[in-house]
Image (cartoon, rainbow, N blue to C red; front, side):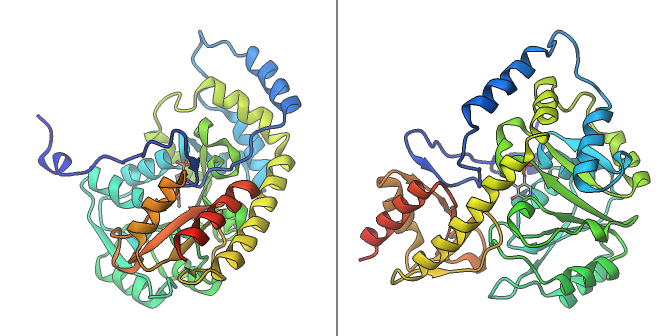
Length: 344
Ligand SMILES: Cc1ncc(COP(=O)(O)O)c(C=O)c1O
């Protein structure tokens, strides 16, 4: 009844975080100020949930287009950017998907669901992108699609502009530049959009993870084709109304992102001062660190009431690595205090 290869897969595991300081999923730790929350609630009161949501979402796409400096026809909305990754892998010509390794797991996982072959090109030991090798593998595999997360998850680094541009120019298939962590990094790649280069974004990391809203920017003709495999009404009415309201208050979320960037720099310096921790450069809202025994440190942090992500075992390059989402100042201080205690 169920495909054998699906039975062999492990389900995407979300650990129980109840009672713990949650620094495992790159969420924005700040909630909304009470007055804004109240206005948001009044806006939601106007939504008639007896009706299906707006199917084409033109007004919302227009608002996002303005926010991004593109045309509304260049915007496609997804139930999180995860759903857009799935739409792209459905709509793209069957063929190999090329990804760097390690990178965001969903590119590989969704390819497997759809029986699409995946070729992984290992990053260098310092997590830089081997652009020449990447293009060679794309050519060898006659790849139809490739994903570059800029900045990359779980490594946190942003590959050099020159290398990303080289792949954008040299790859003939569909290149998806995933900017989930764009709000915390120094550049965006909207300027690279062509008929075969698309940019994927999400509101999850800036503070709306619970709304599930991601978007794809691309050439209008390609967007229209990918739109054909979008589920009808994929963005629910409450999310649409919320996003329409919240984009008008985006400066607040930009300020929060700036605080997170400052905290990231403070954490990177403080962690590097602790004996036994190697901190990797990050342009995202998390830090990847290496310790001597990641399993032990992960468990000890959990005992101390802090949930992070243990990356040990996920990839050859991630030996003894832990991924720590940047939280509030107090949460970050709790991490520092716990690690100082654990690693003495
Ligand atoms: C690189 C990258 N892309 C996309 C996503 C998915 O984000 P969402 O589906 O919440 O928009 C994530 C989530 O962690 C990510 O790390």
